[in-house]
Image (cartoon, rainbow, N blue to C red; front, top):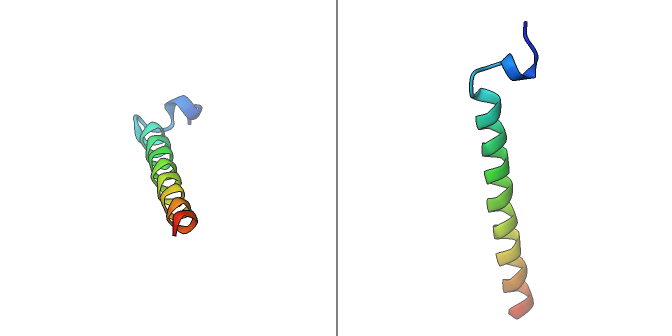
Length: 40
């Protein structure tokens, strides 16, 4: 089998993008929750 670049055509990059997107959404949610808790 090839290296990490030739593992799957697009799968690793898509998975990485999905993880980053989920982390960003989670961060926004945590920030919103924190601000709500602080302001309330």
